[in-house]
Image (cartoon, rainbow, N blue to C red; front, side, top):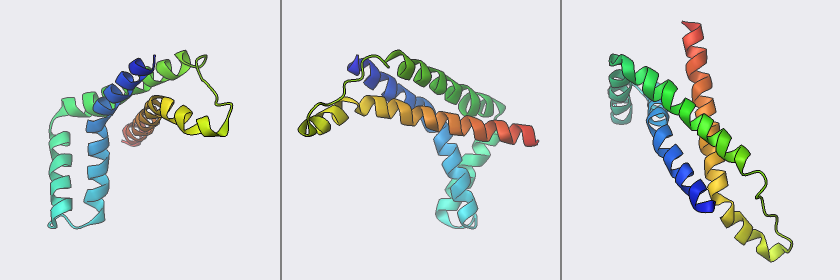
Length: 125
């Protein structure tokens, strides 16, 4: 089951990466003036996303929604197999075993945050 969760975590990272890149570009664009290099590249990324309508729906709404649904399903389906360490020296081993669960949880939280930002922006317009 741990290999399956590692695959889900890797898939979630790949699916959430375009939306995270877009949100990071928005932040970077607002930190500096557009003629300086990091802000100029960020501006080009933002303009590419906004010039094509499918990117806003697919990359900013569809993929994070898929990550959120897959993450919730994965986290809720694996609630029974949580192994708790009985000795203090087994803590690192237990943390390493739960690393894939942590990856799924982080990707799911990122997807939820991105979806919240996108939905709030859509409601504001």
